[in-house]
Length: 529
Image 1 (cartoon, rainbow, N blue to C red):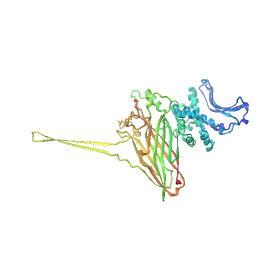
Image 2: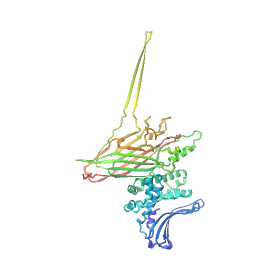
Image 3: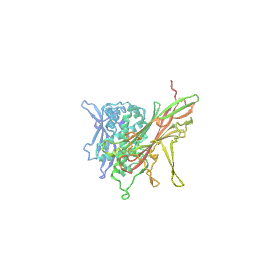
Image 4: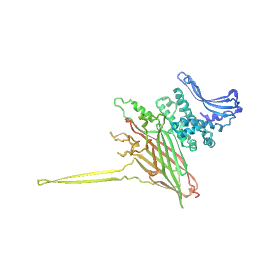
């Protein structure tokens, strides 16, 4: 479905025969149970105005759907012809982006994004991407944007029949568009367009995937039509800017790898799923992990070596709800996954021979324990010849346990920052915990985890960590010969999220994880100052 190439190959104004003023691109087609063909088409049509000016109109047409009253939806009308291949169609891209942003789950209560949608945004980011990347790369970017826009037309504005057709015949065969395969183009676009628009696009991205994953579990048909990509669905990218390495990642929770899961069952009816738990799982499926890992680095130049230092500057993890309903009385809306373990790594590319040594900035913690001993000796004198003596000994041990335990480690020349969420009562690591251990239950109590003074999360259920909480920096000493070059370094993260009951009564428990990795630049260039 190479839509962008088809658009760019449309005839120019003087070559387009007015008697055949319509060009059609079939996007998908299938036959229903009655062997009737249904299809969705993209149509480009030349229209002559009142002043004999010719414009180009793009429409989505629904063929073979008797349930629809309107069979056509206009998505863009160009300025007057003649048509020039390429940049004339940038307003089409911008129009699609504006529609996606305005209808995103992140934009319905944002006045800033509404202004962006109403105003005429700058075309420069899209134009720059078109000039910087090959037609094939921009075509994959446009395909993703077009599929997201079609979701609102087919699965939101139309009937359930059209929505089902979209998921089966359009989204399922093109599900690879929703992976990190197209990261370079999206990364450049997000850096140029800003974080607000990025959040809108990625939450629409996650909302579509969440609906597809739910439907995939309910209907066997989609499983037969397509395979699940070998990599997790979602998107991540890394960049270097102003002395920072930044890794951003987005993933619907349901697309993440399931590490362990547990659900208590009624012994009389082992295969019956309670209605409350079905609703709970449906609510949990509409959640997305959004992560920002931010590392600060410095480069020091010495007489015989160059030293690179890195430390965690900021870590932000949020599990956001992908939806539009805001009912304060709905208890299930307060049930969310929460981060339970974080593993980040950074270091030179594999096989780098210029690194002489790696030093860590945090030692293994030996928790301090306070010991109290108390001895009591009691003597009793009676009229008898014997002396009665009673002895008592009391011993108390106190240990300080934090919500998060931070460690540093190495793997080759790569430095690792590892954090685990621990239960403050038992000391058990939540990501590794299992409800039943050797026939006995070890309880981990994380109810009401978003309230109170001892909570380990923000009020919204996220986690924000500053560099001072993660220990000191790590340092690499490298050969002086690399001075003046720009190196490629690896950065990555693996994040676990866990669900435990917060306010509802349920035995359902689950831990999922996802891993991202990318490359960033490390300029070894002395400052002119």
